[in-house]
Every structure is written in structure tokens, then in C-alpha cells.
Image 1 (cartoon, one colour):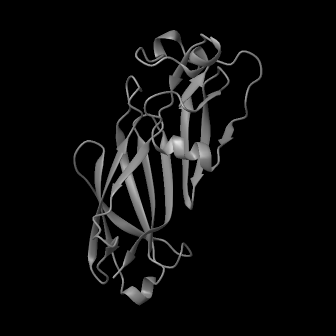
Image 2 (cartoon, helix red, strand yellow):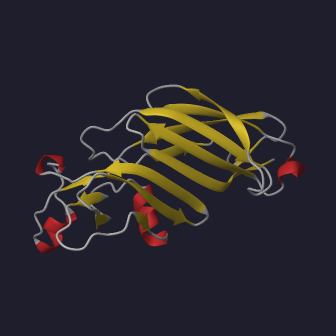
Image 3 (cartoon, one colour):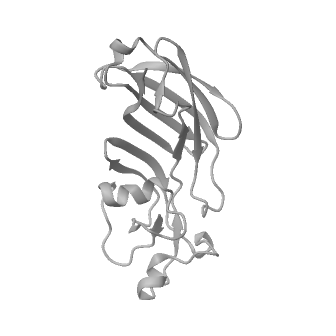
Length: 202
């Protein structure tokens, strides 16, 4: 996922992609520039939103004009591959989230007990100097998103956090447990990901 120096028209400050490209965004665009777009050369804060199935992810990040030094050496820009466009591009500093829900073979967790989830924040591999994630907050819902309650978080290794959810009785979360994760990094970039049903209770 790259920002390219625009030549003519500038896109708006709010970028939205739907399911097809959202899946590419959530995989971190490994192996090539699968999604690219033009942004104004002036430094500004942007909102980028994807929705894959019911999972909604919203990034807010600052982007400025790309330079030749920003372009990854081992992977050319998509414009260069497709139509010979050699203008500078670079990956954007989007925070991605990976989960280990710690579920059983039926993808369920025990009801009425504390349940730990590991969340790892990471960036695109092609980002030259990724920022450091400085905070991660978690919320859980047991009623389909009508109400959210804070879940305890604890920092572990690099960009790794343990989230502890106080699972209620099964009948109190008949449709499962939902999660909302918010993270921020040292450059002020943020991500908020909402998973309406992360897992069911047994």
C-alpha cells in the first residue's frame, strides 16, 4: 500500500475502500504494491477506512510528499510495473493488528472466566523505519455492540499486548463476545478495529 506523488488531480482527504481492497489492506500488502493511491504533496492527516465482512478498521495517520529515498529498494512501485510511472512512492505507516484468541478447536472460550488474548501490532514489511506502538486499549461487548466495557491490557514484547476479557455467563453473551481495539504509535498514527463477534462462549 503506497502513497504516490500526484501529477494532476488530488484525491480527497478521506479514503474509503470496500471489501475487495479491504482484504488486501488487512494482509499488509505483502509481496507487492497491491493498493496504491495519490495524495497531495503537502503534509496532512488522513483517514483510511476498510470493512471486511463485519470487521471495521479505521486508520488515522500523517502523510507527506514521498521522495525517491522513500521508495522500497527491493520492491518497485506498482505504477512503475504497470505503466512505467517512475514518480516516487512509499508504504504508508498504517498500524495492523494480529490476534491469537487462544480458543479451543470449536473456536470458543470458557464462560464465566477471565480469558486472555494476545494482540500484536505491526507495520508493512517494506516500511523503511516503522514507528513504535506506544499504547493499546481494548473494549469488549457482550450485547452485539450496544454497550462496550474496558478490558485490561498489559504490554509484553515489542508491540505485543495481552488483553484480558472477563467473560460473562454464556446466556449473557448469547451471540458471542465482540472486541474493539485502539492503538497509537510514536508518530501519532492510530488504528481502531471493531470485531462484532470475536468468539463464542461455551
